[in-house]
Amino acid sequence: MKRTWGAIVAVGIALAVAAGPASAVVPAAPDRPLEGRLILLDPGHQLGNSNPRFAKQMAQTKFNGTIVKGCNTTGTATNAGFPEATFNWRVATRLKRLLENAGARVQMTRSTNSYDAWGPCVWNRAKQANRIGADVMINIHADGAPARDKGFFVMAPGLVKGWTEDVVKPGRRLANAMIAGMTAAGATPSNYVSGQLMISRDTTGLNFSNVPSVTVELGNMRNAVEARRMSSASGQRQYARWLLAGIERYFAKR
Image (cartoon, rainbow, N blue to C red; front, side, top):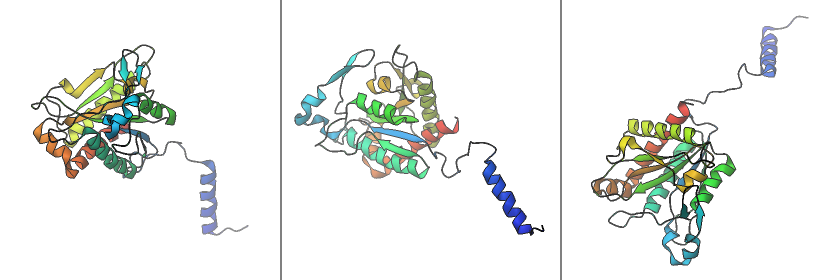
């Protein structure tokens, strides 16, 4: 039976599709480098943590593997009164959009920034990462150090037997990628934490997490220059871009 050239090509395509690709790994498109990744963003604190209505909730405690710590805290603020909780929230919402544009699926540990809301407790935030099977959890914070101090640093989990054996190595890899990526993108390195890396054995959110997790202290809210950047929309967008650079660095090396 005679076949036309078009029919032969069509048969060949059909057979190739039926056979499947030679490799099951499909690289992400250059403009969507985080395709298929699931990322949990934790904007630290909550405005309502300081609300007396929620004193009972804030008084909850849990053992975190090394010490007993509380549910959550109010966070710090600039000297002008701009709250860390609001800064963390605004950076996280901007980062969420950037991550989604890069192909990632993103969840947040809180859905509002309000004086009429509290928490969630830090252990429940980490448990959310475990429950959804996040590829990484990024805890977004700012520091309240002496005014001369400036720059970002990253906290990674230390070894706590029975608690963090599964996350110490991946957490360190994530921390190193965040430091390298953020620094290359222009973020100001800390002048008071050596190498921008702090290993913590008593940070509840890191100890309860079963996925690679780090806390990024983006800067010092008591430093006048950084406080101005943190309080502005343009500065918040810049912090979000720096975080994106660190996250992309981590997945590019996997």
